[in-house]
Length: 195
Ligand code: GRF
Image 1 (cartoon, protein in one colour):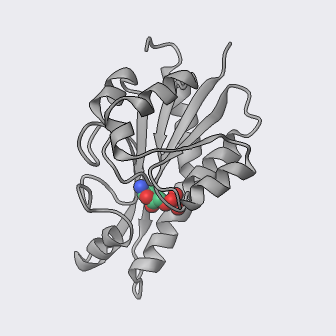
Image 2 (cartoon, helix red, strand yellow; image 1 turned 30 degrees about the vertical axis):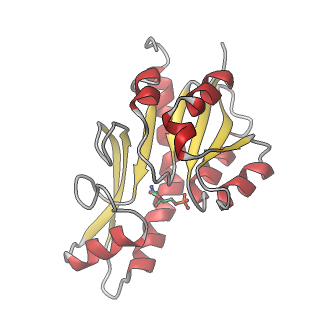
């Protein structure tokens, strides 16, 4: 059987992208075939080189006028993974990859999601709300920020004395531990469904 071919979209550091590339390195049925970024300075691009994953940098026009979808089709991508990607996905890509686009968010959605909720802002909002737990959400991507069917949530404690950075580190560690395995389960469970 042909391997599933993942494309990872990322805007910045790419520590989740690295965890995913490491996990699927030499995997029997899933490979990371492409990493795409809207940010030419993204550290994720250098991380991809280490794993010999091809990279593409694109701009907003290319995303919205079909060029990026062409790249995905040319590379025979079967599933799309967002890992710290800050732009909305156009409906052309969501329609072509119906139910095959997944995202991770560093809070327990629907709390602390939506436009502008990324990076430390998420964790600052969690602390400001006096939450005693936070965590991650892995969900299907729609045309709106941080909506879509939830596949998995993993919780962690908010500890006395936490600041946004310490909470972010705790959640990020959980992300690295969980995102690759959830992607694997998601692809495996969708394997028999038509595109
Ligand atoms: C992660 O916290 C992820 O949940 C969010 O963006 C962050 C990306 O971090 N969507 P990294 O680039 O993977 O280090």
